[in-house]
Image (cartoon, rainbow, N blue to C red):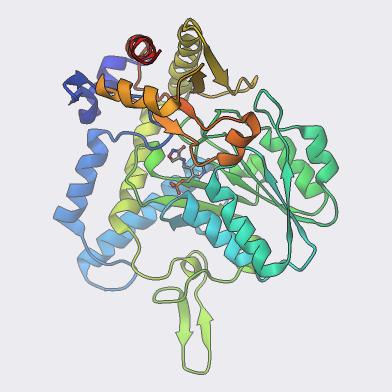
Length: 404
Ligand code: 7TS
């Protein structure tokens, strides 16, 4: 069991007041808060070893390079990648997806098909649409049902020899649905298609095993797992990363440059042009260490309780409807209250110290499916408590009284 008070003491921001009220932070789907070890590691890096990496022979450059590569190794181990060079540092999930779609521009032909799920965040829709525009490939959508689950019979029907790549999130940011990705990966491979898993909302809750999953690409952001903003990871199978062309040209991604011809560096450097976010990459390793110290079993146990308690308490509110009632769900609750715009509730509860997200959550097609302008989303992390849920419920009831 988690010692929740001890965990909360690791996060200085959680003891702050917002608008004169104790902060209740339920916007973890947007970004997680940072523990003191992560905050300290950032200043320690700049105080002690700041230097550019993979270049100077001088001591600081070597220290920074070593720390960066040690962090890559930690992430490799965390997701169980076969090789460290399959783990690419990016600026986040969006960057990782764009790197892959950019690479597929040289692979896809007119009439090839890309399957995208109905549950995606815009960052896993728009880059594929841009790829279709470039190549003449066709985007097909794996539909969802009222519960917010993808319909696997429809997925099976959509798959064909025309399918070149499938893209789906591990967990939906707007509804919390956990998708049956192992099934989807195996089915994609059965027709010879590649598959990308957007793990942005999964890695805060679980440890993905990319070898067991056998996915071709797995992307996530560092800032949602207690790490710094501007960090992220693209895992790609070695064979795919060797096949894809570089994303950006520049320093550090080359073997040799002449005006006649340039040859590219080996993995992972081929995809890491320019000076990277050195501090961020190193500290992402610190964040992953922290999450593992807390323990993913503990994290899941705490979040399961929050999901169950939160669902029960929220449903006590008259006229409240939850969107996303999948059997497999993580600690995200999206809801609306009859006759009240989600934005109005969000604004009032903020005045009472409660941070929730309102709107379409960068997943407009889901809102269109339910024919709603948006939802109020409470997304819980392991450092949240049932007492905080009580505070949110009281604040929502107050907002409801004021608005009706
Ligand atoms: N994919 C999913 C499933 C996400 O939830 C997000 C961010 C992204 C991709 C993009 O990640 P980024 O780090 O590159 O921006 N989701 C959210 C959210 O739900 N609220 O704010 C950001």
